Length: 391
Image 1: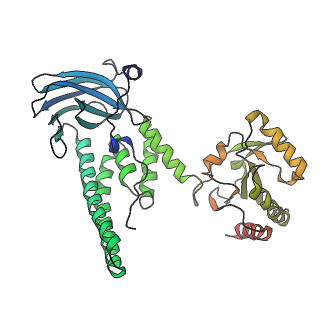
Image 2: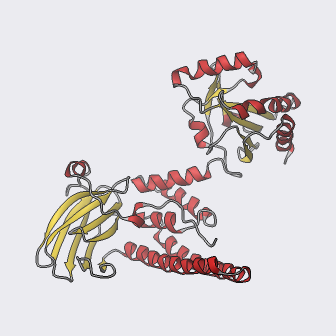
Image 3: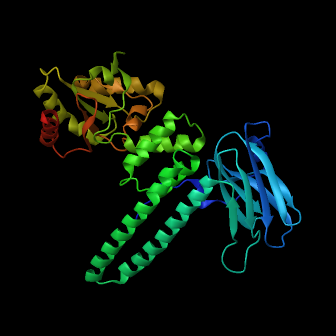
């Protein structure tokens, strides 16, 4: 299948026409006393009467009404202020919706049809924001690419094997050309809201990982703390969590005796981390193989095994007693587990299934990882030996 996954989309690509009630809108109402003024003057090319609304897209991609204006002489305007960058829209009589990426300080002149034509979609033009101009240029390029890709996919489904090989080559050429065109344009937008949205929407999370991670780092360094900046950084951090070659997230947990165990204190050692839970059968089945590995390296000061209890299905106040009872009943005292109460550490490592094992090298980087039971104690033991003995 000829297909590209663009990843999680921000709201700008699917602007909603739904509006929340006035009560909800009042909760996020902006006032002229705030620091970043925005002016929008709109001229309609069609003979339109009625009401236009200024709306803000919230975290759930729903439009909240912030203000309204009567259309007089085919014109209307909004003069307001925003407290942080965001995604807004002009809603003209619930017929034409125009998406806006606002950073603050804009003075925009918008020309629009203002009504829905019998065929096609209403046209509009925005003047006054180089950032939005660049974003729209990128979006147009991506729409053209999507149309060409769809045509190739349709041909691919009907083609014989020989023709499919040719179509794959055509798609690769098309894809490479698109990336070569779009990526420099996205780079020009930098850490602006438009730049964050364009990078998240239009770059390939695998091929462009280096740029995405670097962009998230710049967003953090520049102290951008609006909703979309935080969401983007969180997404990039989550995608990097637990990846080979990345620094292992530090943690400071306590064992059943209340002794603190901090990963960074073990720097210089090779650390095997095993995420497990008392209810997890495959976790328990892997313990004999892990015990065999622990016995093999018990005299090695540069090797440390950490069993991190996580994802328990009990309340936090019952967590410790549940694990303590399990350890004593099963004779697993050798685990000496640390307690990831609330499972935050497992989430930092991107753990989605257990048992999940990680090998952290002497520099604190993740060198190996695996998920699930290997099928036998011997297989578990051999994997641990390979990890410890690897350079």
